[in-house]
Length: 192
Image (tube, rainbow, N blue to C red; front, side):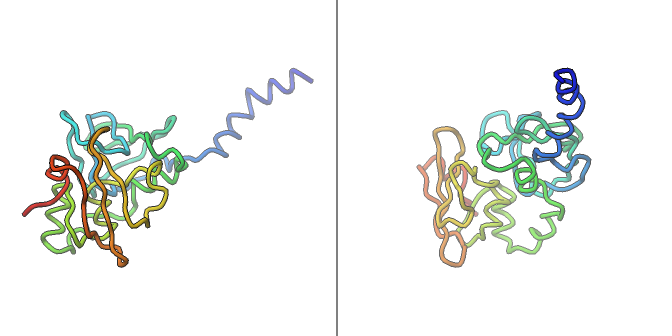
């Protein structure tokens, strides 16, 4: 009996685990939902603004090539990188992947926005009057560990582990204010 149980664990259990865990849509093509920063190999959901990181624009084509523990492997800009679920671990890997990798190219919608909104998003910055979707395109999604609801009146983001900014929305879902210390405001608020 023990031999059969061990055989089950070795031969059958891996397939059962794979079918019950969230799986990224491996091999699928899509686009980045939003502006994300990378060091060339790792893209974190916290999206810190750090020296040595470059911005990958919203709408950049990606191909999902696999998954690992709390990460989705993607091909983007001609190289392989990992999109890390560092601070949104209450989201399953499929939900996390579908938040950041979308089927429809966001740059098509971006082209229809007013000039000041397009410029703000291109610079990964925020401006009053933006919708939630436009905020997410510009600076990425807020981490779910600190923002359980994307519909909250105020969402919290960070540019570093010590620099927080808060985005406030009116009842219609438009940005009314971005509150932060003066240095952080310079990094995240659009000034034409």
